[in-house]
Length: 112
Length: 115
Image 1: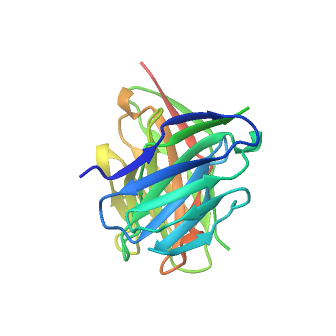
Image 2 (image 1 turned 45 degrees about the horizontal axis):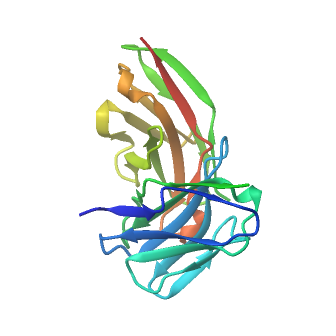
């Protein structure tokens, strides 16, 4: 039982490049989330999903897209990276009816 | 509207002394409250949660928190700090039965432990 895993752990992009971050969970959780963490700002919700095939916008969705084609995977895409997207990205999941979120180890992204 | 305020961005205590990390919240309905801990370069781990049962909640590693509705507070305490407690702590509020977009994180409190 690996819990929540994220790929990659680190990435450096140039402005305008695109990339996809992968989140996978093996706990059969219905809900999945993408957050970004910036110094002094806590975690801010980018997008979330309440089930396979469904996604919704969170607090800071601009510049990001997501997909949930399989229940266990939640992908976060950056179509044209900007320096403002330099951050640490966390994926989380939770079971329907529970309020505890399980977090992945994070992806540190730098956009130059 | 929901919000959560962590009153101290940084707390420093000596090993063996008590820890107090302060959190105030506002919520229109019945809130669920959580404390998460994040060790350097790691993900977040749940310390404890309040979901409308007992107001004094015990968590892992000797931490506990008390839900005080009259003061809209959910402060985190530990009687005796250990060096391994050095980490960032986040207070989180969400409303029962709310949508996922109403999970609000505080800005975090960094706890340092002096030998």
